[in-house]
Image (cartoon, rainbow, N blue to C red; front, side, top):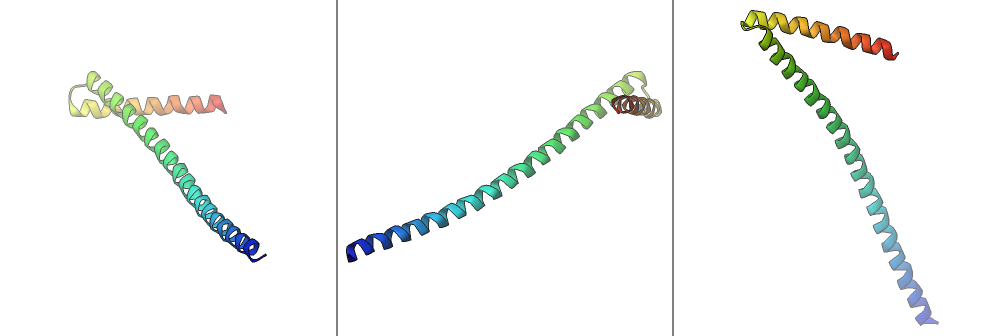
Length: 96
C-alpha cells in the first residue's frame, strides 16, 4: 500500500508542476498577445503616417512643377491643400 501511496504522491506533485507551468505559459501567451495587438496598432499608425507623407511629397512635387519660386510654391501648396480638404469633405459627406 505504501508503494501505491508513493506513486500517487509523485503523480500529484507532477500534476501540480504541470499546472504551474500551464499557468505560466498562459500568462506569457496573454502578454505576447497584448504586445502583438499593440504592435499592430503601432503599425497601422505608421502606415497612415507614411501615406500622409507620400501625399505631402506628391503635393510638393505638383506645387514645384506649377511654380518655380518659393513664394509661388507656398501659394500653390496652400491652394492644393485647400482643394484636397474640400474633396475630402465632399467624400465624407457622400459617405454619411
